[in-house]
Length: 259
Ligand code: 13P
Image (cartoon, rainbow, N blue to C red):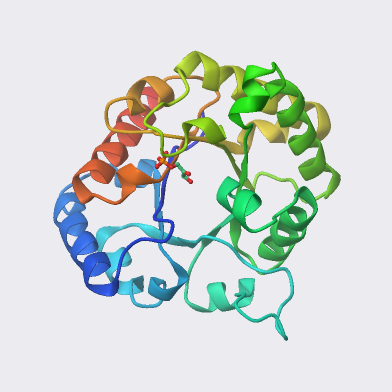
């Protein structure tokens, strides 16, 4: 297992006052935690909050990430945000290709690749999401869907240990019905195998996060799997106490590996 990453995806939630209150509470909790540097804690708020939260995140010892970025550096793309604009705010990460973007905003494997390439070019760390729909799983197509998504990412020639992948089965997102550790590990091992086959041993360093109803109740058993390097968390990242529990689970896992 690699250095665990516990990344919160706030989606379209939180106003300024709520976000500041979250980080004030979180900073109180992380203040006396000694091994926070054994993991990467990240929160991806709406872009409107990225500038506002930079000091608060630093105090809480958490990095910030955006939820999307465009592939062009600038220009006539109303409503979009460039990787350079995100970088300009001191932000290190950006989510790319979340299933909600694919489902509601016509994101495709091709546009995901373009965004990933642009993010890397600007020095951001992309957290690239893949995952199958419930119909795919029911029809026994999980493996084929994942293989096709990973193949597309590999075709961009930009996969490297700088990229973070997130396996998010769409049926587990926001449903309270997480994949079992065995179900998740099966897919993570498939992804890992493909990455190693294409890129060699360096691919063992690519972090593969699990996302989909991860919570303080199931985080330890999911992180115990050899190919699960952390989590991308929606609902449970909105409450400081829950998110902090997830950070603690990440630290506990990191310390077990270090031993
Ligand atoms: P939930 O943790 O709310 O299921 O959301 C997962 C997700 O979509 C994170 O990107």
